[in-house]
Amino acid sequence: MMKLRILADAHIPFLKGVAEQLGEVEYLPGNQFTQEAIKDKDALIVRTVTHFGKEILENTAVKLICSATIGYDHIDTAYCDEHNIAWRTAPGCNANSVEQYVTASLLWLARKYQFTLKEKTIGIVGVGNVGSKVEAACRKLGMRVLLNDPPRAEKEGNAAGLFVDMEVITQEADIITFHTPLTKKGPYATFHLADDAFLQRLARKPFIINAARGAITDNQALKKALSEKTISGVVIDCWENEPEIDRDLLELADIATPHIAGYSADGKWTATKMSLENLRDFFELDINPLYNEMPHPEQPVIDLQHISPGEQLAHAVWHSYNPVKETEALKAAPEKFYWFRSNYPLRREYPAYRVDQAAPAVLLELQRLGFGK
Image (cartoon, rainbow, N blue to C red; front, top):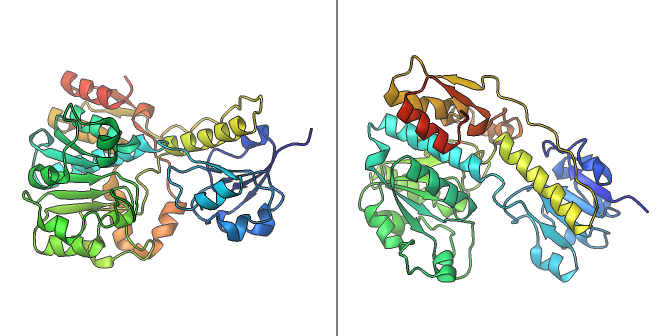
């Protein structure tokens, strides 16, 4: 029986030496995926670098595209469906990573602006894989949480009052964080969801967080709202016109990062695992691949002995991930936007760390977030 022929993006982590258990694997950088390169391949394992539509897929042997990402903007799904090319993504693979990013950013805003998260109301717009993780973390931090997700409310019903409409968010939220897909059509289009009209309706001068898709927040409207003090500040990981991001907005942002909220090693490892499982299941292979272990962090033990109890939670979270370092780097060299993404350092999520000498109440909070004992 002929082995499966696979072409994989050379920059997908934790893949080399593992994918070979499923077939013959060739690796190329994502921008070198061409019609010629893929023509005799059975399956592709990809990221978002190349768009997969008629121009590249026509007259090829490709039967399956596995994307090690949560989104599928880079796949012409209609063309694939019409031509019997299956496609799979890795939904939720980086949800914990984005939650880590949002939590670290919330704690930074609280320190910078001298407020307590337990006193604040956060509006979460989009409550899917990522939004649900953010919701859980915010509740553990003692925040009041408002949820807005019209597609879920329509599908599930809202008899229990789980969801609120956007007007409640605009009037009651001190912080608004977006976790929707980017859609331009339909009843729940999210393109420029936070536009000038939306920002003008805000009652409490909230902070705005975008760790979803760049065009969900109108970047020009954000600048205007900041200058007019309609909002108190912004945390931006996803930008319009990446990598040519708005330099003025970059300077104004409290936290500004190069679209890396989901870039933890754990999230990437999970995406790779899900991609290979999708490939195995589609081709009905009787194989259970052995996966590479993730590297351990340099300092897996967080010693809080000399940290005051009031600072211990933030100290531990920032030990695992500190967005301020990346903000300073991006503000200093915005032209390196893609370089920062391609050369991202090892980042592990909470379970990779163990906390020592924490105050009992803080230890409980940290363990609830996911830190090791």
